[in-house]
Amino acid sequence: MDLNYSPDEITFRDTVRAWLGENLPAELREKIVAYDHFTRDELLAWHHILARKGWIAPAWPREWGGNNWGPVQRYIFEEECGYAGAPPLVPFGLAMCGPVLIRFGTAQQKAHFLPRIYNGDDFWCQGYSEPGSGSDLASLKTRAVRSGDHYVVTGQKTWTTLAHYADWIFCLVRTGEADQKKQDGISFLLIDMKTPGITVRPLVLMDGGHEVNEVFFDEVKVPTANRVHDEGAGWTVAKFLLSHERMNTARIGTSRRELERLKEFAARQRKNGRPLIEDPRFRDKLTRLEVELTALSITNLRFLDQLRGGRAPGAEISMLKIRGTEIQQMLTELMMQAAGPLAQPLAPLGEAVDFDLFTAGLAPRYANFRKTSIYAGSNEIQRNIIAKMSLGL
Ligand SMILES: Cc1cc2nc3c(=O)[nH]c(=O)nc-3n(C[C@H](O)[C@H](O)[C@H](O)COP(=O)(O)OP(=O)(O)OC[C@H]3O[C@@H](n4cnc5c(N)ncnc54)[C@H](O)[C@@H]3O)c2cc1C
Image 1 (tube, rainbow, N blue to C red):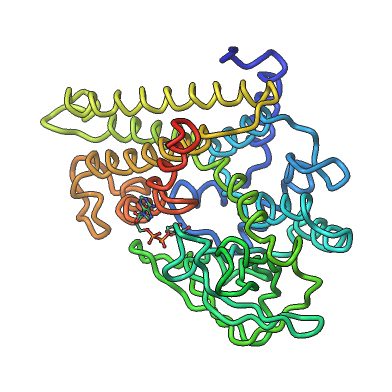
Image 2: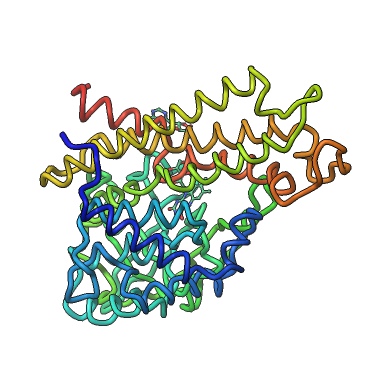
């Protein structure tokens, strides 16, 4: 097993790093530093810059704009983007619907949707979860009834990230009969968000931000040409997509950047007359976190080495999701502890440290990051997957 990058991979990393240094707009990076939410235009601005460079969909086949990067190069690219403070690439089109269409789409679906996803012409969202059908996704109830050359869709999706920005939603819907095995009666539809009968309502998260929504469908007409794969084969599509969804949840580059920010802050912040970073209890917690993050990146390199050798990903994706999101949450907790009362949104200016962007954004970010162990399949569900795949339970 080789846990080092090869000379070519190091050259690739340096090329990406230098390019990001020159091409990541300062105003987008500043939003990341201030823990601000991105508008649709800002998210698309970064998408367009990467699309022009040809780096927007590296995992796609060449004929659709991909560039043959292997798993290690893709990981290096994502880590460097996270470390540099690039805006997140919205995964719903690029990393979910795109790969689904490449694998299961008709020639017409590919020709129409893939270039639009690549160029950032359409903004997509993911319509899987419903009230009562999150972890137990196959119990979903949104119904699609066939009527000639279209379906009539009625039901509700929930937690739909960025649906308020979206032009299209891909949805799992029930087309089968009640007496069928629940996984067998599901189909996968692409739905234009402008179709009459669709209502989007915001769900405000506990940081006060609007990033998720409820989406209601009231007799929405969807052409049968917008069904991906066979009627009743939606569960096969859903499982394929979920494995893609979890590939990049560890966010190691972002955590490395955040850890450095925490260290910088702890060197400035004073406790008992000396810099916080010299406080033994704080140092202990900080060091443990750094060791955990280093261990995660080594686990990730082990995983990449397996992919390099052509092995299909297995339970490792769940391990990386669990540990990566736990570390993201631990980081926000330690940041709150470091800032103390300054982390309150309306904290008075302390004499220990000037009020700054770092402390101002901490409390909402801490609250927001509770989500990471829930979305993309909760961490409890990931543990069940590990138990099944690795232990045969
Ligand atoms: C910020 C955010 C964004 C999201 N974005 C999207 C999106 O864009 N599109 C989309 O479709 N969905 C989205 N989701 C939904 C997400 O996928 C679900 O929240 C998740 O799958 C959990 O489902 P649930 O909320 O219904 O909780 P439940 O499934 O009701 O689970 C409740 C609790 O019980 C535990 N639990 C449930 N079943 C088991 C079990 N078998 N064994 C052990 N523990 C169990 C869970 O881990 C959890 O702690 C998002 C969620 C969040 C928080």
